[in-house]
Amino acid sequence: MRLSSFVLFVCISLSSFANDDTSQYGPKDFSNVSNKWTAVVAAYEPEIEAIDAAFADIDDAQITQTIYIKGVKYQLGTYKGEPIVVFSTGVSITNAAMTVQMALDYFPIDKLVMMGIAGAINPKYTPGDIAVPERWYFHDESVYINPKKDDASAYELPDYYAKQLEYYKARRDTDEHAPNYKNIGFIHPTEVAVVKEGWDARKRMPYFTADKALLEMAKRALKKIPPITMPSGKEILVDIGGNGVTGSVFVDNAKYREWLRDVYTADVAEMESATVAQVSFVNDVDWLIIRSISDLAGGQHGKNVENVFDAIASGTGTKLLLGILDELVATDPQ
Image (cartoon, rainbow, N blue to C red; front, side, top):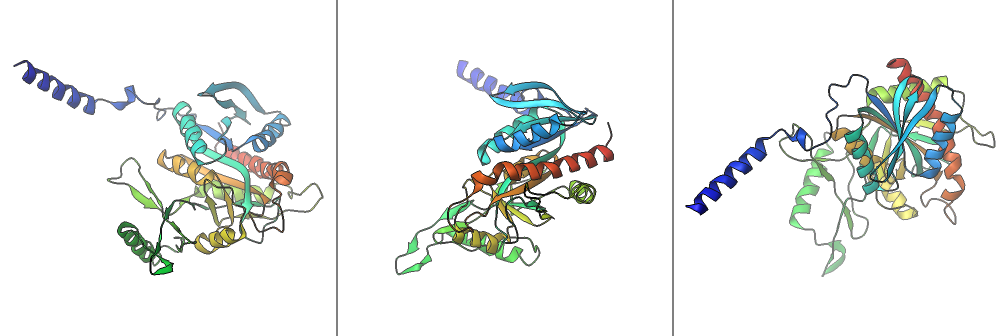
């Protein structure tokens, strides 16, 4: 009798728990907040320092409060009346996922603009140039596969992956931006399966697409701001559109660089943006990412020069960032 009562109690309790409003457990609901914020994001110190320095020279750009959440620094303030939160994700995909999701949990953010450095995959770019990709892909979501015993040039594909490849190949007939998947040695690329509220199941997503309105703001900003130049006076190339790739590796290899260009038609490579894009997409936050070229991702002769150009590239990227923020303020005055 006691056992029956206990089982009944547990069943009722679990049922009640499953049907409860999850808002009592999760982050604050900002759906009714009318004055939403813009997140201004960088990845690491030279980038955030360039943003802070630029804001310091603008009278109506102010940081009014600095708080730390789980050790992460978030700077709250305004940019020409627009409420903002400025923060650094930290380097690589796991840090980016954590810091962006925390920001969206704690602050009423509806737009996110990120600025940082990247390695050039497209040979048209040189250090200091700027790319604002329309699409972002994960490049190192992969399956590592053994070669066949009787043919070292072929690989023993797991059944599930062979089926995925058939799907990926067929999809290219209907999506011109889908990757042209092929292996590089034992590394065989695949995709992240994404979950989103309202979906019945996870979906494989080859890429995430930036907000169209923010892309248009970037184009308008580029026409209005003075030409962006290197310290030498050389005018830089700024290109809006195309593809960026993200992974948990610092790319500094010519062969891998060529593979990224072949498979993803990649223009730039770095370590955070696709993660920022995915988290923003799942949370229904509009996003755009600016990447300034700091190095050639293995396309150079000799040693990588990222450490030479990271601060310079952060400076050029910040100039476009400010132009986009000006467009945002003009479009959505508070």
